[in-house]
Amino acid sequence: MFKDTMLKSMMDNLTETEADVTPQWCVDETQVEEGKEAAEVAWEESSDIDDSSSSDDSDFLRSTQRANITTRRILERNLPFHQSKNTLSIGNHNKSALKKMAWFIYHHDWFHLYLRLPTYASVLIFLSLWTSMILVFAGLYIAIDKSHPGDCGLSFTDDDGSIKYGSAFAFSLETTTTVGYGLPGDSNAFFENCPSVQVCIYFHMVLSMMFNAFLFSFFFARLSRCEQRAIQVIFSDKAIVKREFTNGGICRYKLDLRTYDIDSSHPIVEAHVRIYAIKHTPLLVGVSSNEGYHDLKFDPMRVESPNDELGAMLYISAPHIISHHIGMYSPICPPEKKAFAEGGRVPIKSGFVVDSAGFRLRELDSHVETRTGLQCTVCGETYGTYKNLVRHIEQNKRLEANDGVPIIDSHQELNVQKIFKRGESYDRCHSSYGIMDDSNNENAGCYDQFKKHFKECNLEILVIIEGIDPMMSGTFQAMQSYAFEDIVYGGEFAPCMLSDQQEGIAKVDLKRFHKIVR
Image 1 (tube, rainbow, N blue to C red):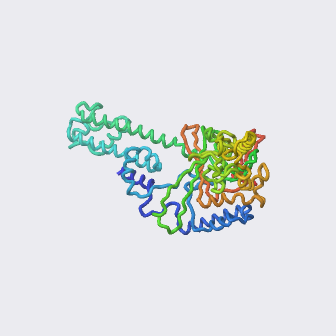
Image 2: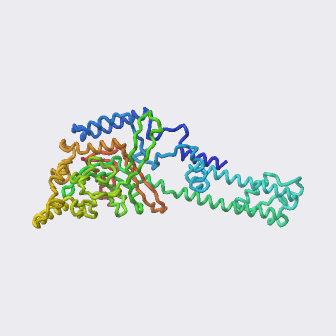
Image 3: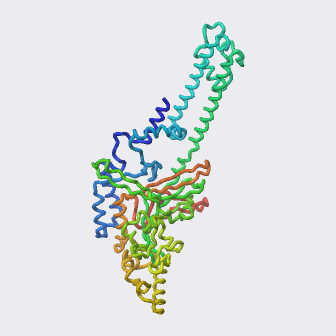
């Protein structure tokens, strides 16, 4: 009975019903209308950036927000303060195909399956098992007393027959709880005349001790779970895509979000962050689910701050900004920008960009010369930045001209201005250095390609912070999801910390935690 109950509960968690053949990202007409209304609200909130542009990309965005498609999140925001319960909306389909696997999992990993049951269900199951053990051994004591009438002394000598069931149940309960015997019938404390009772009591006590040990470990594991510790790690409601310039004049885009551990007095140990880009394949309402199968990829996004090459370690007892550089290797980079390196200066197909060989690299590593991302197409010398590559080409052109080297197949054949001309004017990003004001009309359209790309691929960004609870030494994960409507363009997070001079401590103003300023 318990196996059937456990298996049913497990199958409910692992599978959808046979009738539910619609993928989770395909929804009904009501959800479509809600999705369109949400998209229109999100569009109105960002109108100070988008409405000033009359580009084709803006026209695309206005049309797609009214399209008859919508996408559910992998991670729903179902807690107050725009947070998530850390439960992924991913299930298994085709219940019949999973029956054999379910039985295999039950027999090999039953302990964790019980741990995942609701507390009331697990308590009810264990209470039923404990009671069943008492009842079974009560029946055994009755059977032994019947097979040895008068020898075991479990019943009174003037009784007709064996021990009554009520007395046998009390004897079994006393043996299970080891509270001390009120011996039944005419028996003594050692049952010398009935070895069968001694053997039965021995196995009864062994089983009872094992059951008690299991209950202790089970409830300790339940009570010491660190999963709920993740609730105290909060994330900003919105993520920011913003543009900035390096000291070398390179235009670059970043994705910023903010996080904070509310229980800052007990800092999380070894906290680190991972970010994934999830691109949902949209499915029009009414399309057969057989045509909706696809691979849902969790593309890792390299973390700039904290540096993922140092483990992406962060200290979130104070509000912390997490940054991802949207370079040409980023999975969320629009195709138009992915075709150029260094903010539009170097075309990918020019041959000057080193092939990534399928690795998820960071373009900014090349900017600081920790990795050489550019190469000379003549001699093969590699460089980290566009400026160093140009210096190399110009220097070798002068040397080759002095030495009378033929122009063909030499550096003299390279026209730097012609090769990189498109890149220099590609993004209107080289008119000045430093942070530019993205709210004015001149630069308002610079985010249109991002909005178009995010909308087309139904982008969802999944942020995962892992750490160790210092009190229970258990690992936990805190997660947050950012969909198209959760991304703003331009601006930065407002400061949210202040110093209390009277108490002599720093405080975090949670009312300003989500605030974004231009």
